[in-house]
View (spheres, rainbow, N blue to C red):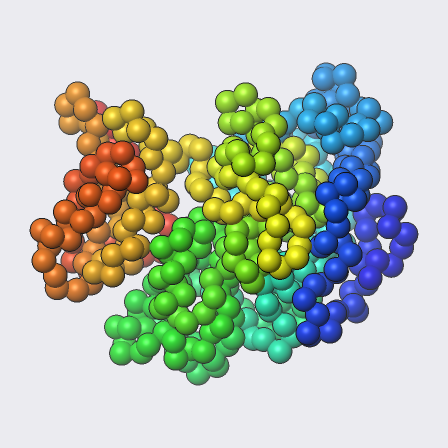
Length: 461
């Protein structure tokens, strides 16, 4: 599979390789290594990517030199935990000072083959540069992950997400093509496109779908309004990224019941493409961490010290195969719990059994309780009387915080009884009893990409 000795870096993959369709693994040897074997392989790649970045990127060389570290000092994974962390803010600031790609670009500008980036809605946009061989390794990594949850060359994959700066659509496209399946790059984001998506899904009957969970629900809602059962599309696999919805148990059950397909959670960060470095397998027991592609650590959000398996913290990512802009110990700001307990698929990677719980900065502190929007969503998705959209509003009209949940109804019901059931369950799960208001279907806005369902109005006025 590898076209040059395994000790070389970056690895070069045989792009003609594809396992037999009945093979459970894309690469059995790499996916079933012992922990010690994988640690040895990961350490070799860490040392190689650090040397590459140290020799070519002033951004990293200055930081590591200030900390008294150079690549040759990293002899164990414990040593690697001493390497300085970086954040998205660091990347934005460096690109502002050294436009357009920052002083962490490790290739010549004329070697850049693809440019993606952030939208810039929360600050200066960040540009992502890929070399051509980076793109080939991204495709290979995504194909490996897709194989693990059951995609095969005989499949047709409907890509229902925006083709723009957003890297998710392009990574899905690259992975599907590398795997040998047919890809239908439908896209999203244009007015009227969702109704067209319903028509094309019904006509073409693809076997797989990629997008965000929110957009999948929007497609289902649009289909049902036309008298079409989403199960008629014939999907057997739906895989998602861009928001944590597919990892929320009640959302997963809703999607699987609505479409009659298995629901796969995946995704990390746009900066850390291949974003399928964390991804569920067909067993759906949580997201595997493909450590030999992107090395993931879990750190305490306050102390930034490594955490043992069983703990909850913030993932920190290091790309092990990227030349252009390697991310080395990038703090995600997300929250996850991890485990090294075995998975039924036989892969020996650690897992996030609950997926990405949410972002640390999305946590709401309401009357002393730590509340994540995903926990509220998990409660709401368990009530079939509710529609697909809801809104969380936090205010402080007087001395105390108030939490209001506005949810669309999709069926006639005893509203008082339903409200009592929802508030009681939220009290048990969240530790606080919110106000619940029901609104008419279609009241709240829909999205083709990431949902925005929280309004914290306490800082206003």
